[in-house]
Length: 193
Image (cartoon, rainbow, N blue to C red; front, side, top):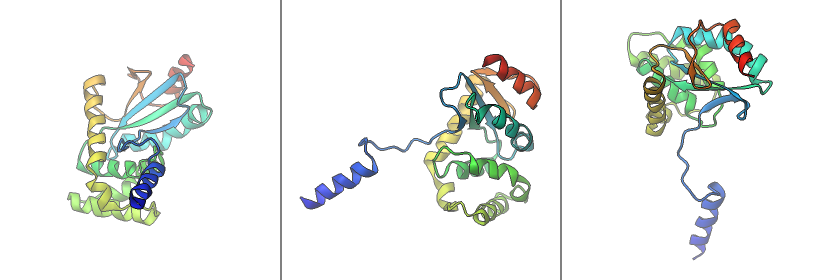
């Protein structure tokens, strides 16, 4: 009887709603209640996506996301197995934070080299280990729940928004068709605020 009570308390405090929560959280930044919502479909092996993270995103963050004027959600659209594996790492902590995602884009040239997936994975493992994110690399790559989440993002992007290239930005459920530079995006966002 004491064991049952102990198990009940452990389960309740670890999971107060009494339900299993294996849902993968989206990676988002900004005000969840903002009237302007951006979705970026991207692949971690895409150099244009890395450039977006390095050159355009920081300005958007300062101008809109940090001020609570807009929300951005980073969705997965892996173009190859290396991008799928890197995306698994970005989601592995399942905390909804973008720090690992941004890191992988900034370090893309360091890990995205080699002729085989084994070489790419080895580079990816070393880059992640050196930063000390506290991830279990093999466990992250083997997580079927995360993999399903990533592939569902890709399928939804292709079906709902006809995504065929990365990065692709959706603003308030409409595909952004202009060049992905800060000036164009700023103009589009300001019209909706």
